Image 1 (cartoon, rainbow, N blue to C red):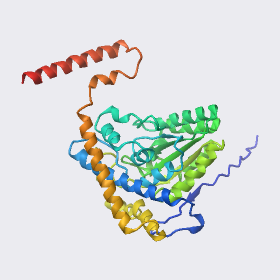
Image 2: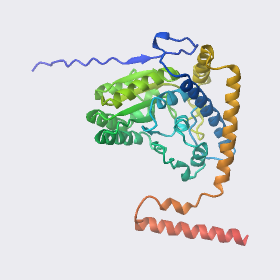
Image 3: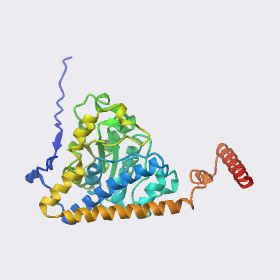
Image 4: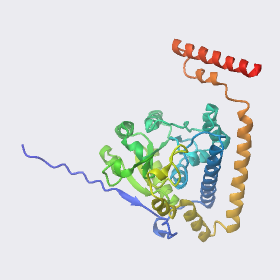
Length: 368
């Protein structure tokens, strides 16, 4: 039998609107209200300054290990800003800026990374799932939420975030396949920050782009300048509109860079060069967006300074609230209370053992 070729023509587009030097492609400039542009800028700055403060707190031993977002603010906020409040956000472990946008209190973020599970509680008026540490596991949750929304005809969209390393996980492929088969209103946002801890992108895939992985599942895939908040917003808005209209999922690859460490337990100098970091620092999304707003007259230098001062004050108050709350939280026995209606015998034994250990420690402390 002769071999019959099957034609698959699915070119992947790349979108960039606001270049790193501030050059703007006017033909592609999205229509975004001034109040939304200012909110995007304010939240980008707040996310960056909170990131820097959290690094100080971690080094002082006041919170535990966390994943910095420095350099990835535009990829997160440009995407999440395209959603309605009633849509779902399904994060991994590096979406601090997106959490801030959705209204997660800063003290909750600090509590979570301070080792208090209470910090993972989502406010009742939010449709944001808690942080997911296992790589790529949250993609399946987003597909499930999307499938439920489609089944119930609620009009909701589920947006999930993940990194380039997640595309090497089986959960990633299962999620894209299921979303495509059932045409769920799911938007997959890959923050391609070039490194999966110490593994470079070149060791993750031979594909020219990550966006082209959507081709195998017959869903649209687009590669976006992830440091250009205008491009991310334009692509995300289009994907959200498609999903809400019943046209199925979309895969966004946001090309960005992690300017800091993978987590605060990591030393990036062991696997990447200072020259590489310096090159990407020139593409920092915040100065680029700030220049754009200044040139449009939406922002002034005085407002830049006022915003930085506001963010610093808000962060300081959140740290104070966090440290006040720590004294009221943290009973280790509570970890057993919220998983099973009836605690299995093995966990009952563990709970009793921990209870005895804690009581013994309290007695020793009292005697001392």
